[in-house]
Length: 388
Ligand code: NAD
Image (cartoon, rainbow, N blue to C red):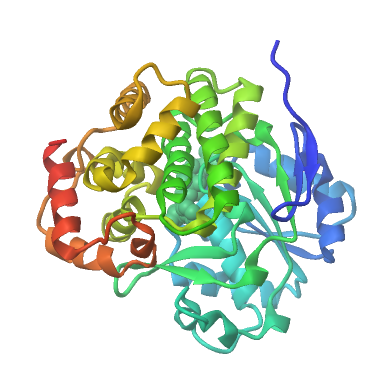
């Protein structure tokens, strides 16, 4: 029998971690200062027993909540606008964001936009644009992840696609950080293996890019290292046996750690994955997993020493950059991650556009080597043909 860790953490926000802790949902909302929540999730989750059980917890404790599930994967601004309308019409005083990154981001952005008068795109994560927001107009948020990948539950941003321009935009405000998070690994047990794989690789991508980003942030680097060790230990187990609660718990920690660490920066995996996701609606973590080895290869000269330390820390059989690359390739193959973008259904028609979008993505600045249009195009071409 495996055991599952339980703990309360106050970093980077208040986190109630442990199997079964969804039973504390109403108390979490109260401690975040609200009692009439809008419960934001996605249509797939809306029909699952874990959602009904969470709503029941609220009902049992006399908390009137309204379910809002008009949220698509890779959520768009119309989802946020509809949520804001539901929030106002229902006289709500806080948001419970329940789901994977899509529902969490939508819920966080709904809470953020309830009291703003400017369009959502005015709050993109550019310079100090967040200061344009009225901080008093941001509703409190309780976040409950049901996947273990994005770490959005501990982040201060939401990723929303602009349906007109087909671009993914990061909407940022420090007060978008949920006041309370419930990390209950039992909620992730029903994730099918393919989603377990894609979201788990997302957690790895966050830790890896944060670790490689050249800015000075030793705290983030330490968190990223341990996050990757947890992925190495737990992702194959969670994929093979979805009911392995200890593995599910470690993946939940790794996801939260990835998003905590990437305050340090991300890189070209994300810069390319964002436009691909916005144009082709591919799953974010899966797209990251496809790009991962090609980006590693392009960054090789700049990260060789770091990869040496990483491979040693992970106790990989082969040292150095090659040892880490081999491990990534093996993990991808064991998780049935496609090797090429072509297997995700892409062709090269929009390759130039994607390269141009990648270099202006806010994550490009964290890449260890400067991401140029030519460089982004070369990574795309390699990922298309499968040439490492
Ligand atoms: P997702 O939220 O899109 O969910 C994928 C699918 O899994 C959905 O169909 C959902 O219904 C289903 N699902 C979720 N939990 C389940 C469960 N417990 N059991 C069964 N099915 C379940 O996927 P995701 O990878 O968690 O999130 C991706 C989104 O997050 C993208 O829009 C991406 O851009 C965004 N993202 C945000 C951040 C951030 O920092 N805010 C970071 C990375 C990614």
